[in-house]
Length: 222
Image 1 (cartoon, rainbow, N blue to C red):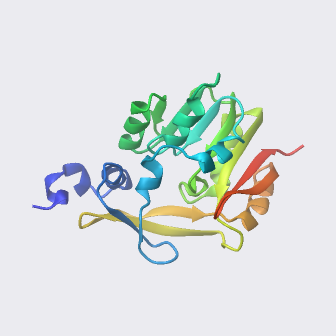
Image 2 (tube, helix red, strand yellow):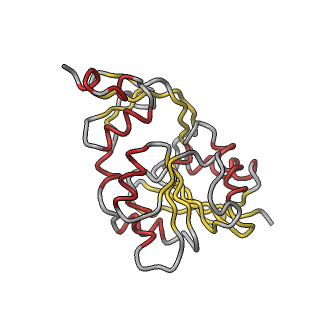
Image 3 (tube, one colour):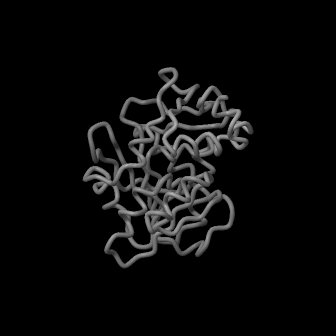
């Protein structure tokens, strides 16, 4: 009997159910993005934060909302020894459970739903390509403008220079089961300026923080 036959929530073919199993260690591939099928790099998300992550997190100021927190490695690091609120938010139940297991508050749901302390967060973190959540970076950045305080900022991880910004339909493939399609966007360093202008943000920083990893800081346009 296959894993899909054994586990009812895998048979529903939702992104959330397949991703939950991936976070528990079941090998998973992504279909539909550039470069063909690729292994989902779950080991990069479930490990402890490293010095490269710390360079990204150094741009987070004050109370921070980790959007698409995954299993919580970054939220955990943000909460260590600092006097600030940290909240992870993710649609995947297993991601929220693993974040909470690290001792960090986490909310299961979408950032497009009501968020605790809405309008008072100082930083929204979009790491690990999470600017692509939902396949609509314009809507996501506009929504973060509502979630953040007037002096808030977005710290966003981007694809490298020369990578074209795209939006695609993608699927997860795990244990012989393929998920229903979901929209995902990739935003490169070269495309963030136009994206920020279109949503009322100004890009105050664009810089590499690790090999092949880039960040931008978006703040309110004067």
